[in-house]
Length: 284
Image (tube, rainbow, N blue to C red; front, side):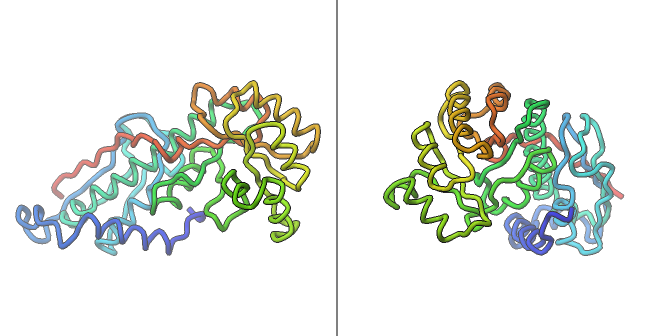
């Protein structure tokens, strides 16, 4: 799991645990004997791509440094319903206090990885790649983007400091699309490619002639996209094309076959369904 910044992960998990634990788990404190021990296991309730095992383990480690998670699968692996994903044992109060936060992370991140895998399979055989966006859950961007990779997608910009992407608002304030692109080209240098959001052939022409290296095509349907891509590549054969907009599992292949290099899908992180995962605890 080298892609993750472990320091940032541990810091985030600490915040998540404190948010739920507050001043202490008063239910467990009033029901169980001190130092009672228990065993717990995470079980898949449906077919899914697993993601978030290290994050789940860190939840328990935050509560007890001696706690460990024994995994029976790995992040990125597809499992069937009924599969025991991982198990752990230790003090019962630790397992109960960490249960909800660990499940929240596993269920959500597995949902991200699973929907990403579905989109990737939907365009199998084409040259296009599925990519995420900055439309992530505040505080979970690193983990969500990691889950996208596990599902077979690729990461787009991590943040605003991670590349130039000129949109309509930038162009409007700067005094026009061409002005904005030329200004960015002069200031950013030749190493970075400049991405520009366009909606029609006129804007594509202006962006390319001003120095854009990537066109982010927002709005047009597949037929219009095909024509715009043909026009753009007649001006610059090596121009990269990103498709964005209302892209679903039902229509994503059409966008891929239209010639897009990257397909940005908001749904990977913005409206994902949490996977069904249970945490079964027994005395022990």
